Length: 157
Image (cartoon, rainbow, N blue to C red; front, side, top):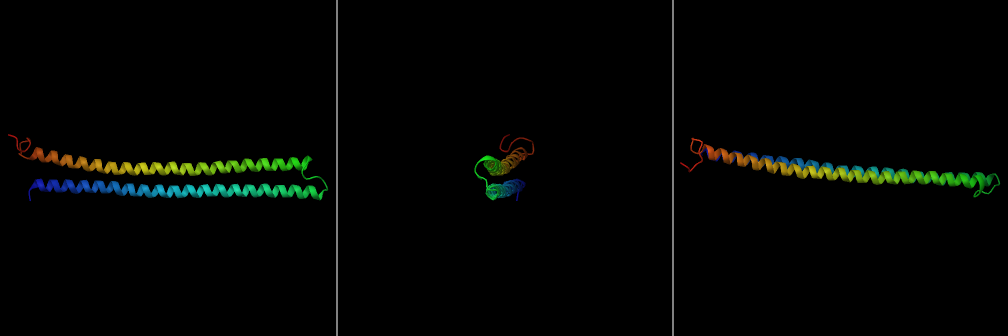
């Protein structure tokens, strides 16, 4: 076996390993992207759960105000009792809206981070291919320059 064949075989093996390394790195990044999407969904659900708890608090406050007013023999839907109900609703709705926006943000941020990881995975594949191409081109240039032992390409005087 000639040294040219060894050079070619070595270059091809090295190129394959570079491509494979890029694919493996991309695979890991793709898995991280999927995990990040799942984490974002979990965060979204936590915010939605908190929003439901805020709604429960509104209903409890309403019931307490109505019961207290009724026990005192006053109209539960006007005057101070009515104002207290309006205030409880306003505060609760504000909290619910904030939690809803937070849930949307958590999901969107997770999607963006996932997309970034996917782009990094694609870049890793391209980097592996570029490295492999450079290895093969370098080996070809070495083979041409070493062909005659004089530094001139093979086949030229």
